[in-house]
Image (cartoon, rainbow, N blue to C red; front, side):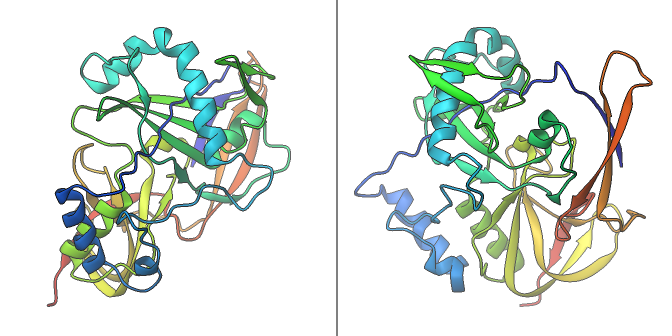
Length: 313
């Protein structure tokens, strides 16, 4: 895959999310917790907290990457400064006017893992951040999510002070912001994905789903959940009509922001290469181009196709 990006004025935007926890769950929350317990086993079952939700990571394994808490603080400060300028863009994304003055973080911060396990040491920082891991921070007006902000885990060059976000390097690519379409949640809750996976495949989920970014140039907000179930299930590609047996698949907003759809590697994709070439225009001249090779994770397909399940019991 060849993708061009111009390094120099490239900039990402962001948004934040906080978690609201109650000591006594509401009736519908208790029902959801019971559904989750029935849908999971093994490590996934052991990873459910007292509120009936999965315990999610608050930090990465890399000490040079920022924590979920810092990502939340940066997202809040960024939104405070940029909300007026972003009003039109996020309202267009949402399909309705966003209450920019009322938005507050409203849930958990979600780690989006990179689709790549390695890339060149001299890859420009802005591209490294674009293809690397991110934190997703939801923003709500009341109980309704209206915006999501992704913050690069490499945003160590960003600081907050007196409610203002100060970037030490211009165009560092720390944030990406998106208005959330009416009726949707970004990302979809992993508990919802696990229950839906069990209901559809009839196989219990054995690990906490992992949120993974799709290969560049997809944005972090289009990340999908990587799901693993107890036993292989038969998947049928809606595009290729081919069938395969797999114990892992992907789930997320692949057929519309309000729905959970399932996917696997596109059976019609001809290339099995686990590398991708990114071409970066390093200046105003079209001839000033540098190519970089990114090494994609073996469990992340270059392309996905939506699949259906054949239930065996």
